[in-house]
Image (tube, rainbow, N blue to C red; front, side, top):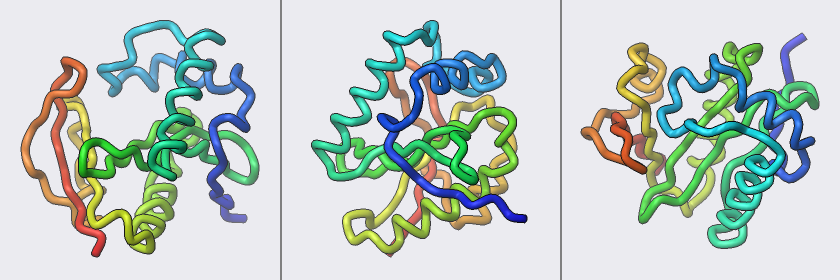
Length: 157
């Protein structure tokens, strides 16, 4: 049976699940901005920040569920005039990345607010074939919160 991928709000997820997910060293491996410990206070601040994005922009990061089970978070966050897509899966769900991304990109294509999507990946990510298959093109490098990222863009119109 194929996993059913659904999206929910991060505020609907038990904070301990998010803390455990974000505390896994395999998750931090490609997240240069993940530098502090994830405890209940950090999760509360993270979820509150993501909820502010929803209030401001009407869209933000989702909790990602597979057959109703939390497997990570991701989605779109407005950065200036761009909608940046991020995806952070639990290690036991890394294999779902392609399906989750396709579902999210299909959402973006159907949403007139999103004429294009950007992706910021740390230079440590070497396997970029999935972005190429999506049709995203490399547009350069950028710095975000003091860390360097490779920037890609996917037209959705």
